[in-house]
Length: 193
Image 1: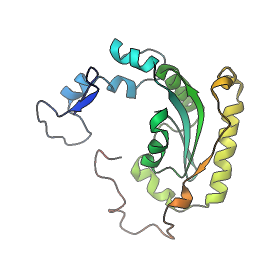
Image 2: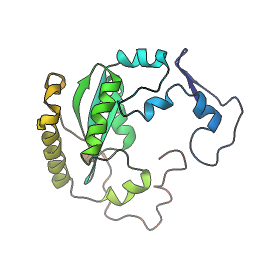
Image 3: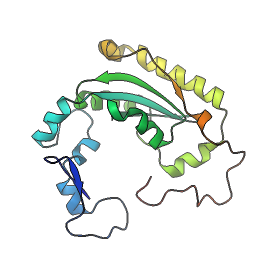
Image 4: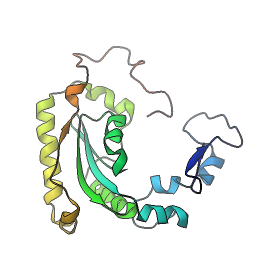
C-alpha cells in the first residue's frame, strides 16, 4: 500500500508483497509520499514539495487524548478530529491548538512529547487501562490540558487556542469489572495497533 501525492489516493503494492508485520513493504515505504509526514517533528520537512505545499494549507489541530491515566499528544486534520479520537479509543479528548500549517502543528506536538506526554499507545498497552476511575482520570486529564494551555512555552499560540472543550468518551463505552483472562479478542491483529 502506498500513497500517491498527485492523485491523493492509496494504491496496492505493485510488488504484491506479503508482510510479516507492519502495513507496508520496504518498496512501498520508499514510495509513500505521506510517510515522511507521519515521522515529522516539525523541524525539517522531508516530504516532497507537492506534499509540503498541501501541508501549508491544511487546518491542523494539536490535541490531547486520555486513556485512563495515560495522556497522548497528537495531530490531526481539523475535519477528521473527532473521528481520530474515536479511532484511537480515547476516553477523553481536547483540542489544544488549531494551526494553519502541518509543520508548525508537528513542532508543537513534538514539544508536548518532550514535556512527557506520550507519542503513542498500542492496543496491548491500552488493555490494562480498561478498568479505571473515570471521574478521577477525567479531572487529572483536564488539569494537565489546562497546564499545557497556560505554559509560557505556548503563549505565542494563544490566538490559535480555542476555549478548551473537553470530551468524555468513557461514558459511551461498555464498562467491565475485570480484564478477561484471555485478551485474545481484545488484542489487535498485527498492523492494527
